[in-house]
Length: 286
Ligand code: NDP
Image (tube, protein in one colour):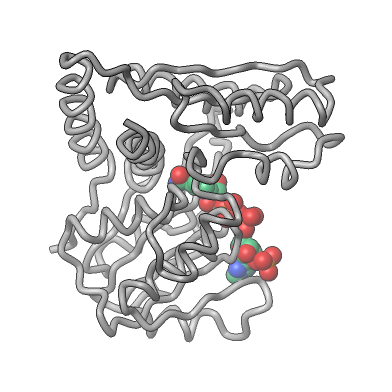
């Protein structure tokens, strides 16, 4: 029997716990936690992600201090807004929705965020803390994967873990978190030689590439744990779009010991960890 790693159910459970904690504190007269999602321009996909995050905040009782700037906003204007949010005592988490318009230097802006309000866990200080194994706000997607593995009691100690994809958003922090959990980690990318052979040896396989269905049953070690971070929009013959992962779920599910679905696996956990990071930052500020 393959274990379904149900990220949606775990994310709901985490959000219920956060909501109860926030409710108890606001009942005692404390202010609610606050998250500011900063969006620049009108990218429709970004707007949908921002709405999704703000709805999740409102479900658990986090106040949204989101700001929407026009696509013409200058580097100095966005930086000034981030400085203002850094100084705002009601704001515990700040997140810049990516991608930013091309004329803006995204890295410089992300570095402007106060590391202790860095809800996405992507600031160099927080990535440095992760490298050193120090406490700090963790990158939401890989942190969500770790929580999913932990809740299913999956043994990581000494396990052969393979992370496919080395982005700063997912792959690299994922590899670091697995190292921290005492797995033996290999990080693969587009220049990796004989990826299928590496995948067949992996006890834990994390796919974070962005190529629909690239991992099939023949690539997967029987009874291994398969985590599909990929989210790919695939056009159907009837013109509608469907979300699929990097893993060919239908063929891999019978072979794997445990697997995340797409949607309903890692995606909801990413949002839950964003809320949790905001509440962690809030607790330390109370
Ligand atoms: P990036 O495009 O930044 O990184 C993709 C990585 O995959 C790169 O490191 C690239 O290698 C590697 N890669 C590309 N082709 C191959 C190949 N043929 N074999 C091995 N490695 C390859 O993507 P992200 O990390 O931002 O996102 C990855 C996927 O995860 C996307 O589908 C994205 O939508 C999804 N995602 C999902 C989230 C969630 O909440 N579930 C959150 C964030 C992302 P190289 O470095 O050599 O170019």
